[in-house]
Image 1: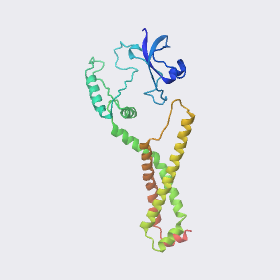
Image 2 (image 1 turned 90 degrees about the vertical axis):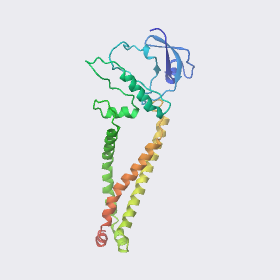
Image 3 (image 1 turned 90 degrees about the horizontal axis):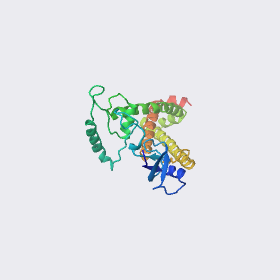
Image 4 (image 1 turned 135 degrees about the horizontal axis):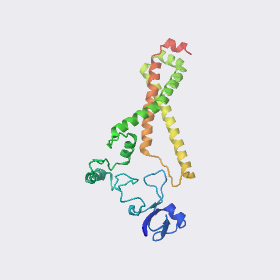
Length: 268
């Protein structure tokens, strides 16, 4: 194939030429082929499957059979756009190019392919009905159901714990009701107490997460992996704490408010 050009990662440069040694303009050999290094890019972690590589070469230098007439293969294309506003334009242009692809009318009569975003591609892999159509609504519905079922069990456990905790305070409930406390006041008190406990648990969880993130970033169990807190995920977690804190506190508080004064005083 002759001599080609390549872009390598910083890790590949450090391993091949030496740490920090300028590599642009030099040659690197792989698979018995010499390539001239025309660029060095920052290394990323292996977890970034679409961005990770140690070496990039033009597809025309690939050893794959470029003259194959098949429409499937081991290639993934990545479109780099200036902004999110260009996504729809790029997808429309891509579909126009696909519509001009020839078909033989026998073995296949249509081509199913789209320029999907990462979320759309993930949803296609999760819900594969062989139609090639992105169904984000169905994907979010499925994810929501799984998320609800995943958190339903700890919510039920919290309900049982709250009921036991409230029953242990039955004498307090009886005394407060005897002195004129309304059921609404008692429900409000116990719901607020449960929310405070829920947010305290959430704060402890966030604190432990920050500590673990710092430890992972310090130890580097995976090369070039740097973890950080995603604000959107954090806010979603706070919202989930609020919702399930209410769910686990309303029923025990309502059940407690229905307790008779005499029953409450005798229960202790």
